[in-house]
Image (cartoon, rainbow, N blue to C red; front, side):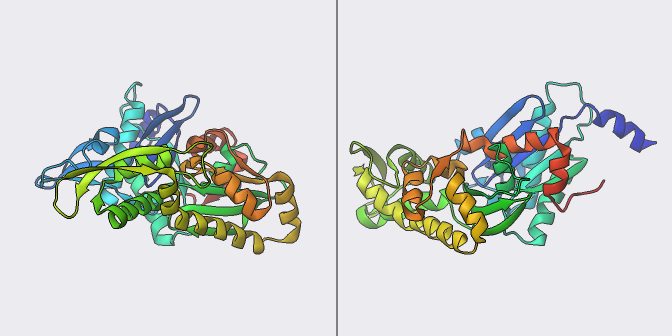
Length: 349
């Protein structure tokens, strides 16, 4: 009886595609597009365990809270590190999506992207968190596959599609053919590591401590993989580690490029290693079609040119790389034949 009642209510639910990222969570709703793009941050009152804010409002509180309020980032390196907070964050987003519609008990189908190289336990944690948040059925899809589909690449053809997905916590490098991953490298560093590179460089060179948000702003404004056409500078404020007082310095793009070079070079080297383990027939396709960059890290100035020079292969930054994976989930819901071929450990309700 209750199953029939819940089934009737669930028809009012929207199918959701979720890009559950270390830095940002995007939610795609069938026929509506991307309706949520918010930071994966939750503010918690440690005295009462009450959730105070989620997403954009919680990010504003990072580094500014009193002792009894914690800003939690429930995902680390692309996987769940705090199950309960992740569940509450997903529940909040699901409720927010359905708030405009008459839906007593939203029970949507949900597609969630996962990194390539995660354990069975980590996969189960993602699935359980989504089910606990209200999903009636959960499909897990490799993020790099969803990104390739979002970029409208022919993933089911007998043609190589090389995709480099640089997110906040992970970098997935994969060669896709016939609906599967032929060769890959999954790295547990990406955009957040670039931010940490900047923080460490400024601390070591200038004895100045800055926060994560300032580091991200520096990366966006003057960060690059190759020199800009014209030099760039930026004033940076932080705390002097010697006397503890506020201090401002001016940084150049050359200095920040030097700070980022170690991580950028590791990404480039792993792309080359992935090509080395790829069958020669597929390498020929890649040389002709190029390498496709997705994820927020693809927006780092000159990264495509640096990779192209290192691999002697054309490199393309896909349209709107930040939302590519989430858009791919929308295509999957519209074409269930493709979904059946690319899902990982589907939850059969």
